[in-house]
Length: 165
Image (cartoon, rainbow, N blue to C red):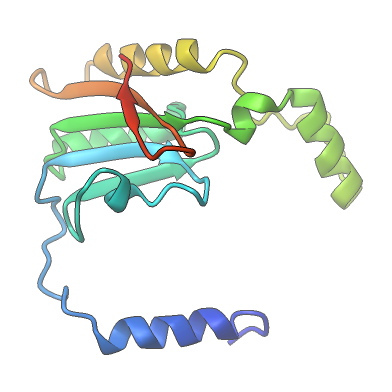
């Protein structure tokens, strides 16, 4: 084990000691896929009142649809029977507060790397981006016609999910 993960290994050992989910199937019990942000304040299953095995989860900076995520969504819908897709962004998101220039500046300052060709997906208008992402998936011809797609914003201060699009 690499030094620096001892606490994680200990936590996993405690998890394993009480693990009872070995028989959970790979297809989600609630036929749901969640696309959300990688923010540590979002514990997806708890936020939505679900449990182990209920849904698939894709996480990235900002909880955004991009071409790579869209490929995974097609697999989830067609192969894994995810017929409900929720795109859930959140309040006080770093990707919605940042600018391309600021992100590049920080990355360059931390690494010294050339960031001139680095284009992280910052969000200039969170609600508009969420609506756009919902429409992008709704218009994807590789998703089944009966798929239900919605957007929401999770409030990190109250825990409430507000359905938007």
